[in-house]
Image (cartoon, rainbow, N blue to C red; front, side):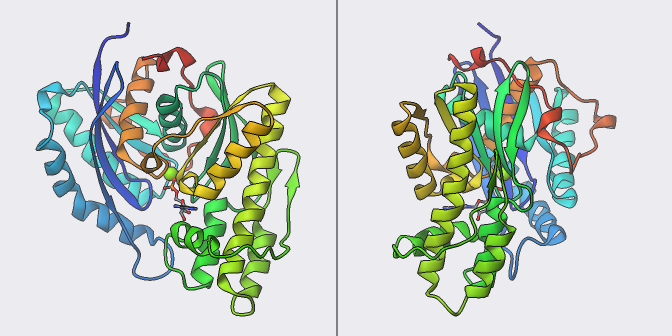
Length: 333
Ligand code: AMP
Ligand code: MG
C-alpha cells in the first residue's frame, strides 16, 4: 500500500476559487471550500474574476485552516493551467506561499486531468471512456498507458460555451447551464437544429448561430430543450463510438456540464443499451472544485512530479495530451 499523503489543493482557473484538503489512502476529502465569482453582466471578465479570487483567498484559507491542522499537510498543489492567466496567478501565488511557509513540495496540476482523475477516483472506474465537458472544453478521452489519448473533440466552441453564449443572448444570466436545464424541463417540443458530428469530433457554432437567431421568435423553453437534446445527443453519439471502437464498457463524464441531469440520463440510456455501465458520482464534483486539485496533486506527486517555486509559472494553454496519466491501480482503495 502507498504511503498516506495529505494534500492541500487550490483551484482558480476561471469562475471558482476553491481550496480543499484530501487524504489518501483511503480517499477522503477533509474539507472543500468554494467561492464562486458571478459576473455583474456578460461572461467572465478575467481581471474581475482574478480580483474576486484575490479578495476571497484569505477568508477561504482561514476557513480551511479552521477545519484541519497544518502539521498534517504533506504537499501543496494548484491548478497550473489551462485557464485564465490572471486567475491562475492568484492560486499559484497562494500555493507557493503555503509551500514555502510549510517547507512542503509544490505540485502544479493540469485542470482537465484533475476533472478526469476525480471522476475516476469517485467511481473507481478501471478503464473508462471519459467525456470531458466544461465551459472551455469538449473532449472524448481515453486514459491509457501513462497518457491521455484525446479521441475526439470540438472543432470550434465547447458545449459549455454554447450553453453560456445562448443563455447570454436569451438573458438567462451566467452561468447558463442550470437555468437552461430548468427551462428545458418545461418543454418537449424539438426544434430542428444543426447536428454536426464528424467521426468522433463535434461542432457547435452552427447550432449557436441558429439558436441566437431564434431568440425572441420561439419560446425560450423550446430553445433550451432543443439545445440540450441536440447537443447532448451529439456528445453521447461520439462517446458511444469511442467505446465501440476500443471495446470498452465503462463510461464517465467529467466537467461542469456533467451537472446536467438530462446529459447523465442520456449517458445511462446509451450504456444500458450496449450493456455497458455509466458510472455517476455526486453532482457537486462535476463543477470546478479544490478537491480535484488536491487529489490530482497526490496522483502527480506519486508519479514523481513536483516543482521548484522559481519554475512554477502558470501555463494558461497546457494541453491534456502533455500530461502523465496514472495507472488504474490507484483507485482500488
Ligand atoms: P466548469 O468550468 O468545469 O466548472 O464548467 C462550467 C460550465 O458548466 C459552464 O459552461 C456552465 O454553464 C456549465 N454548467 C453548469 N451546470 C450545468 C447544468 N446543470 N447543465 C448544463 N451545463 C451546466
Ligand atoms: Mg473546469
